Amino acid sequence: MRLLLDTHIFIWCVDDDPKLSAAAWSTIETADAVYVSSVSLWEATIKHSLGKLSVEPERLAGAVIGSGFLELPISIRHAVAVARLPALHRDPFDRLLLAQAISEPLHLLTADSRLEPYSALVHTV
Image (cartoon, rainbow, N blue to C red; front, side):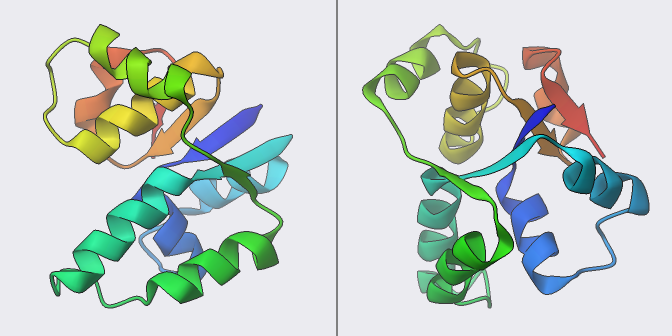
């Protein structure tokens, strides 16, 4: 299985946060490939600048490289795919992550059950 980590799942990995369940860790550890989108770093940078996230974006960027996770850049194909998503959820970061997951295809690992109606590729932990 090829995974795309939702932003909060990635941050929980980096912080070794107990919010990340043993089942989620197992899914990540047994995946064929694990991707972190540049969308997640963009989201973290914005939330950090607004004081909504304490983790430094530079630390997250370094963690992508140090973890063995693969970087998933935003492509034109991903951006256009957002327009094909139904308006079930308004968060632009989540919508772009969903578009990437569906376009690639990758299984999106998230804790946000509101994303499940979009695709069978969404896995909630």
